[in-house]
Length: 522
Picture 1 (cartoon, rainbow, N blue to C red):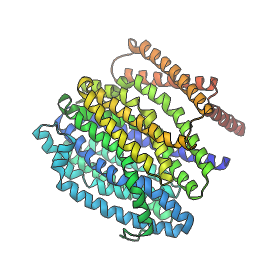
Picture 2: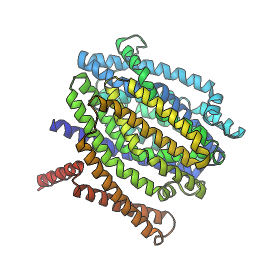
Picture 3: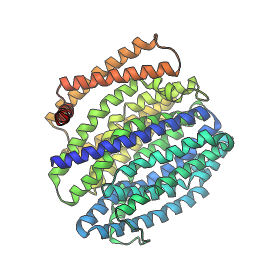
Picture 4: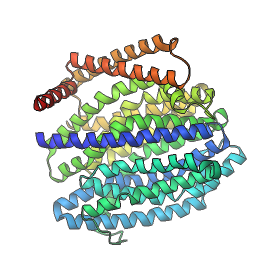
């Protein structure tokens, strides 16, 4: 058990490091986008809507099949019938997903105009026309994404995590290269093409690893094979639960198109991207490694190990997410200004984007929990609870957007999103607790209280450092960089020191591992 835990820790650490590189490049990509196009320009608004539509359609229709259905069925097939049978199912799944995503691509291109109206009804005619044209250019990302994520599913099911984590690095490098060398000549249409090339490369870069694990693709378009029947049976109820984030983004985009002449769309896009970069490095790195493990434990009927893994994952995630959320809320404005400010991204853009980031960050705990808890349901091929929780959270987001958008502006959209993700996590937790498989216990609540105290203490230190340096540091990027660095350093030191003094288990484990390594080196 200790060896397996050590292997999982190493895998998560490696994936986290690779993901961090990819996310850092993603931030730099967004920085270039902000400087070149800003938030209020016609091209920025049109591009963000056009790039979001294919992503939302892929997430709504196919992400559930790949993220939630493929790995459990693949793991079960391999446990019962062996590797060859699992690979045959993988080829069958890849063929069917390729066919369906190609069909959706054609439909999306044909229906681009009504789709833009659905997503951004508040745009003027010229902006809407550009968004329609760009949507047609970018819709093939659905096909490329379907293939790339199918490859990811196969590799993760085979405990190969590094290359799947690396794919965002590849696509971000392509887009960054475009900004430096081609944007002046080809503009926003060239940018759309660069995104297409990046997603295509995300699929191609995984082919050598697939060959290494022994996978060979053999076309099989059967919808009625045993594996596909299992995947489709699970896909129905699971689908709604994976709709939560893309549908909520769509809802926020539609309401945002009526704010600040449409700039609300760009502000939510930048703040959400930044929030997901920071949260995703930790949360998604953990869930991508843990989900295949939970699926195997389910297939092997190791229920106690399943529960222990789930509880430890939730505990470790909260230990990381709580201070990140507090720090991000306090440093939203200087962070947005440092990363995006300049060029077309003016003071108004900084203001509305940082407002959104403050309130979106409040939902980071809910975001982390919903990702982990939903994987527990998917690993067991249970879809009813995520179905209900997802539907309720979408309705809550829509209702709150209607009430809060006009009086609060972009902050109202962010608050609605935060409330929705938090409610989703709570609704996932309740059934687990009711049957004794959840994470709540007296010990857990005590540890959570210690983490909260540590996070509050850290927040106080960050606030004091921020206020103390505000009138001392020079204006501009250098001053912002120094401010962010000193605040982050002081905050991390304060949090880990308080966690150690309060004997938070994760801190005790980290100190113990560090002491063991020091003894080995000695």
